[in-house]
Amino acid sequence: MGSRINWEYKTLTFEAAGFWSGGGKLDAQLLTGQPNELGSEGWELVSIFDTTKHEGQTRQVYAVLKRVI
Image 1: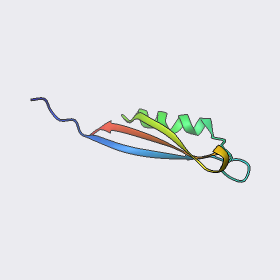
Image 2: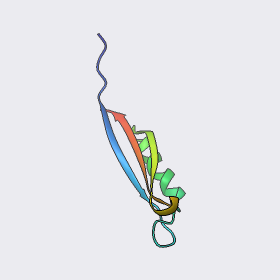
Image 3: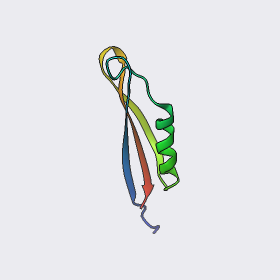
């Protein structure tokens, strides 16, 4: 019987900015920088999705990461 793998999960939240707050613009540097830093600590990005508000504008983007513990 093989050994069991245990996972640890982390969720990052990125706020959209712009006209009237939440206008759908994201800081690309932040969106790639933080996951890259966490990648060096063993975290792997497994999912990324946005939440919308009025007329399809992005309010927040969530990134879910995991690593073996």
